[in-house]
Length: 227
Image (cartoon, rainbow, N blue to C red; front, side):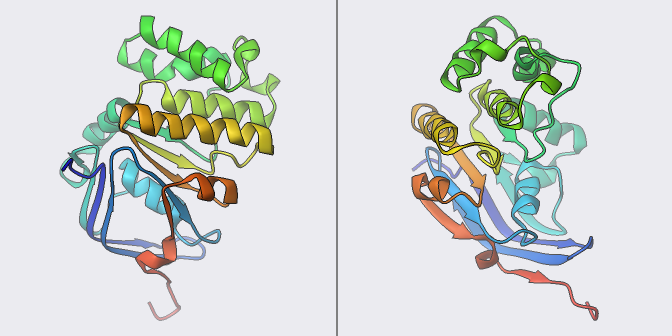
């Protein structure tokens, strides 16, 4: 049996910001080829959980393994290397670079790794599937929010990652374009034996996933005044 694409063991994280909470995960696994949807109200810990899986945050306790990398044993540079080489990350803020074209934004992971020929062809392939092929020469300010979101999805899938972490990947899209994204993520999981882990409020995304869970099932608790 293949090892899990995502493993959390005894993870504890305390978020001290506005609406602070504690997140506890005794045990959680997600498998290669599996699409998993994480749901829950705003502020319940979905984005924090994604940040832990991406190595952007480090838990106070426990182990986080993603794509065979034990993130807790890596320094900042090591976690960044894992994000670049093994993960596809689609953030809710989209994080496009304003002075780059849509094509250059999609190609950014390959540019940072010094790879161009095959990724260039794949960028056009993904853009075509997402119906933004005619927009590749435009910079983000000349794109609608939904078009920017599809650029971010294409960038997240460019290097055929082992694990895709997506935060509300259909949040700015109409039903037809949402279906394109859902189909593409499902196809990536199936064809690359990749795990796709999504935080979402979109019931169509939840329905298309292999399984879903409420982040509060992992024991997410508000921090009271006495905590």
